[in-house]
Image 1 (cartoon, rainbow, N blue to C red):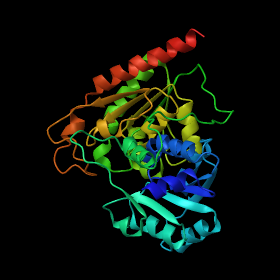
Image 2: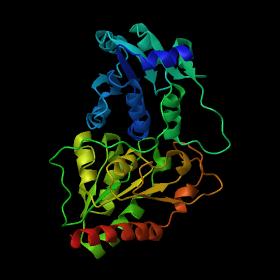
Image 3: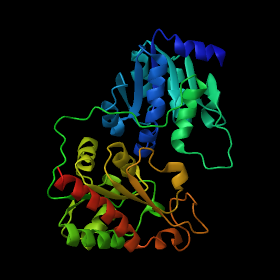
Length: 341
């Protein structure tokens, strides 16, 4: 450990961080990655990331270079990309996979740090073992534990971003973005009919524009919501990640499940109402604030399953009226702030 601490404080090359593969996890890793940059100072910080997430890292002024990784079966595509960066002295893996550790080793990176007690451990020079706790351990804290283990200061706050100058939030009409999907699985998705009921009530009161957002894998719940809410604009599967971010930034309210969209809303400081069912807010709630969590803890929640094997009790317990009241309060505050300007 002492040697690693010395190495990271005196890097004469670059530090590589392999980012998480999920959008929400990537956002939750931002405090840790910012702390790594503070630790290495003038040394370059490189992010190796799935191509689908690369836009996120373009917003981060503390990231010096982005390497887009492929999910091709041929791992040597990624190995070749890493080998071209001959000055990488250390790699920190926020993924747990055997493959990402093997890629770094085959690329000849001198020091590889990752999760202990996983399949990748055999390829690691330093194994970070997350301490067991009786209390829920937030995912952002897990990533931050890596940087702390290597000497960085603990700071769970989201870092400031460099946003495009052309992004705007208009005063009228009020825009509500709805993300009914959750890539992890249907157990995290509230009912499209309930989303539609809330949106109709908001439109009746505020005359707001409703837009449905989601990725390619969210098309089904988004199309189901569109059928329930024909007046909404359905943009699911039609936007790049950059446009997805811009749409959420320009919204006055985001209504979603526990998903990547929820973390983007928090990151961009868009008022957000997020619905939890099979997962635990104490582990994956947004870390940046600006979010109201709706969660009814039933006896089988959290189960962390992709599909509910019984009666979807956790989502059945979330009443549309309660969700509407949370949205109503946030949207009312937004309208007041714009009319007072």
